[in-house]
Image (cartoon, rainbow, N blue to C red; front, side, top):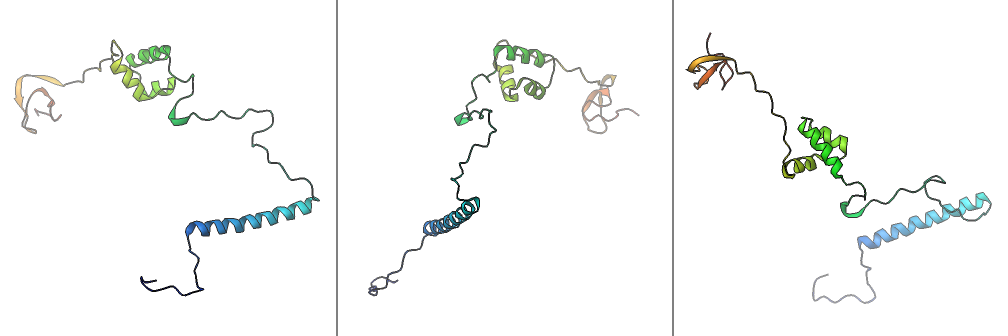
Length: 162
């Protein structure tokens, strides 16, 4: 209604809101559910209302609640013995993902301990790659235009001599 125009007497509209509509729908559903419960009780012979029980079978303990805020359960932290075993596996050359799965820790934790524990964890050195035949002095590679001492070229991997 535009400003400055007086409202007509006796005619007031109810404000419509999404919350009001949602409440009305839920009350209608509740009425339907109450009617259905009354019908079922009548069919059952008017016995006492049914008490809902927990889903867990009788005699079993309920699962413990999950810790809040991402905190771990007590007793799940890695012990110094765990890290000693992780260090042995890491220094033997085992992949970090395998170690993490085996010891129930994260790969990030393994890398952190490898870098920050004193003395630092050492990986075994990878075997040197075969470099090909040693040439007498440096030779200009015709493919990549760089100098090399090996055939095939140590830069591009193509044959230097025919």
